Length: 336
Image 1 (cartoon, one colour):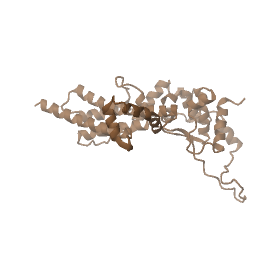
Image 2 (cartoon, rainbow, N blue to C red; image 1 turned 120 degrees about the horizontal axis):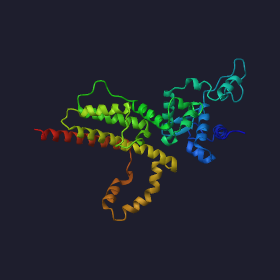
Image 3 (cartoon, one colour; image 1 turned 180 degrees about the horizontal axis):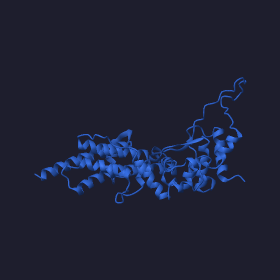
Image 4 (tube, rainbow, N blue to C red; image 1 turned 135 degrees about the vertical axis):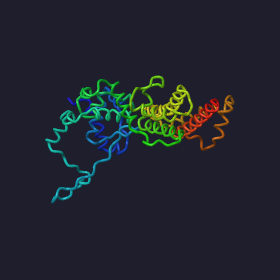
């Protein structure tokens, strides 16, 4: 009997071959596959991994799994007449090569490392969110036996910490810090925002009161604390300012992951969601009970309001740095 994952892969493969799914189109996510075919998430993950190994689909960060571009066509063999369909004909693998490819974990087990396990897990979280991550899913993505990743990582919780440490450590700081303390703090904020932009799932890991003891994350704290050192602020205030800077970045970044989750669950983009909510918001503004809200909405005019997290990050960072400048000046004035 054909296993469920193979039947699912065959159905999606057929849809791609018939043009129902074109290059760049999203294929069903792991959760959607599991719901549509009534299978476990591990089975859904294995089906998509099979298609990924065949080169039919690929993971697109913050989009999901999409149909891959077809490989270039092979030219006809020397001396052979061109046949109809040669533009899309691919060379058939030898029986030995096909058997080797289908042998579970062939070659992959020998090449498996902790770094590969962590990187595969990060790719899954980037593409489908942290809830889609599982040890079996990582194994399927790597094309190895389900228990193989456990030789390098003790548990899923351990894996997530390794992922976070790796992700936070992707970007560093200049060897020669600028003279301006404000510029140093600005670099800290922008570096963290760039990391969260790459890996939105990082914002979901822990609340401010339970910081993660990770070298990759501590690098960012050390840079920000060094920028605040020597400004006349007491140690508690220095930590408060650092936490406020981090929370500004993390607080906005949480919305990156939540937006992706809601879009996947509802099938509505931000604009479509606002179109649905429009009549209710218009009714609230026109009720006369909220004059300030109605005034601002009315003054926006036909252009409306464009919600952009990057713009909010820049505005918040500027206001926060202005506030730090005032705090330092007040501290110095009171110390005279």
